[in-house]
Image (cartoon, rainbow, N blue to C red; front, side, top):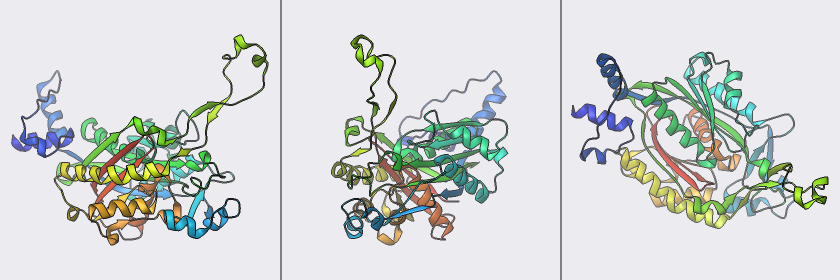
Length: 382
């Protein structure tokens, strides 16, 4: 019975420390007792693991020297402050949905899973091609059968890890078998390219992983830590606004509020100093909390540190606080800049395909950004 309670606790997100407290009572309502027992057995014996990954980036590469042609900056100024030397930006007929589709296809191919066997698609994005969401378009393009559920998650740079957590919940408690988690963003659309404080940081990309159900003994998602703080929203925003236009209604004050004017979002506005302080403070705490929940406290209990690729100084600062040496830190921010929800799966995909991350390696990952939101996950690759 103790083993059953422990397995149930893992499925419902109860930390191993809390298992020593009074055990919670689980009720599965079912008209047939045998069916209820079978369902409970399935729940407590289901784990999930990452079995495939993929990524895609735009063809246009914008270097620091390219930026220096139209803003007051240079390669040394940018690279010493951010670690970034290049970024990819959507151009021509490229769009974000196509990048997401390409990344998802590569993840399915690596996992050797047919699109018809996909049960759920989660698109983590704050800058999609359609304000009503893009996940169903990915579903259609992949050729998924039986109309599997597909929807978007909006949590900026923390989005991918929230998608990973959601995937684990759908598998462990919902009976789903194969879940695609896609992180894709095109922040270049919301950047003021005359503001050297922000335009130097961002790029566009997509990354994806396939999360698959498995026996609890093979479970590869060990612990999560998830937070948000709306008070910090002011430090990183892109607000809704009505476009200023001259129209007939402006001549009559009584009708100025209707019909609504054409609307859009403002340029991204960021307080870089506050975001830096926020990240180096909360991310180490969050990773340590996730490690504790996973029963893996201490920096020696994982192989790789994989952070949202916002800024090399933030990555270095968090690694130092966690006492993780640079050779165990995954970073590709120099080549792509900050790609928001795409940054973690993009960096993971490169590390896996480059032979750095091997099956069985344990990764401590963390995302952080607008909201403010931050999230950490401890997982095993393969």
